Length: 99
Picture 1: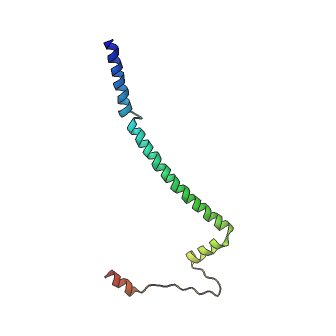
Picture 2: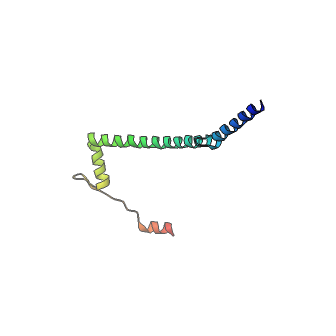
Picture 3: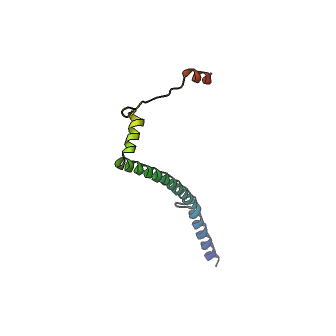
């Protein structure tokens, strides 16, 4: 009976060792869970970004307003009989702030 108990005890110790320190152990599992949560968060951010990009492409395909907005903001284009004003702050104000 003592031999059987000793064998069971050794088996229990080996199984516990593998559970806590071996390959695919509990700490490894916890690290994997943390990585999965981090990846899911990154995926959600990318999905939101994709939705915005799809909305932009749909707007560019269907509406001229988005094209006009980009032409005005990025290329500085203006319509006929339209005056464009650009306000530039005085350099003296920025120098006083820096001093």
